[in-house]
Image 1: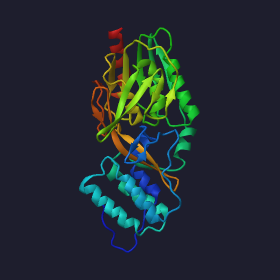
Image 2: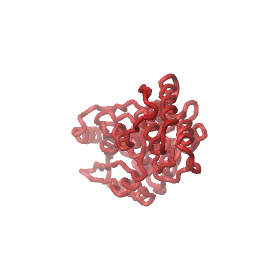
Image 3: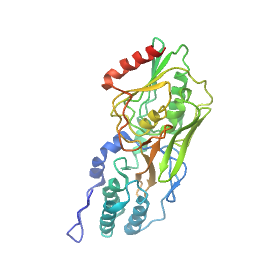
Length: 339
């Protein structure tokens, strides 16, 4: 993206609500995103539902505030080269004329896709509460000996996270299961911790996936039903591992933490993916609390599966491509052939 320079001494700044519509795709597929414990360029990465290390400082002028946040945006995955240099210079020039912190946020929102790409966006202060109010737990159903678990998007309270993970793990202890279908078709993201913990009966302990920040990596691990390093640390306690074929269903609506749940099965011999390619939001985001109460969500890394493959902004293709509505039948046929 190239920013045009304003010709007037002062410029009108669009309301942030209109800027947010431009990033509706990102916000829709990722209520917020995955995290790693660690630091990138000195800024702590925080999870979507857990405690956040606050980057807020005492009240600053709009110019000092904007300059500070622009420096943090230098950690963005695309914050290199001439395009970012031009966008950064343009944003800095506009910030010098900003009268309020809200105007600065609107300017930063303009520059955000250049620094972080399509998975970066601004969250309003009430977005997390809206997610809590709209919480939907996983569901399960049994047809013959095939168990289907459906994982919706999730970002909620600590209690809701525990409920999400436990509901999922309990369903996977159903007796007489000969195969499992993990339906991620409508999982647009959120907090990956409860998702992976809930799926732990289907996953081997150890490194589930890794986050890549330049030359550094940070592992997401699973041990005795406890997930660490990605999303809110979540535990369902030790659970028996289920030895059965696993069919994972995906669609273009599978995104962000939904894609992290998909990558948890990448490289497992007893797992196969059916449906259509995902949305392509498997990158890693940092949350930056802003002085205005908003949160800047900035993409700072990519994900690495246990196979060694890296994933970020490219959709993840299924093993067997089918229309999403036909994926359950294809999955059931494959499970029957393996049972």
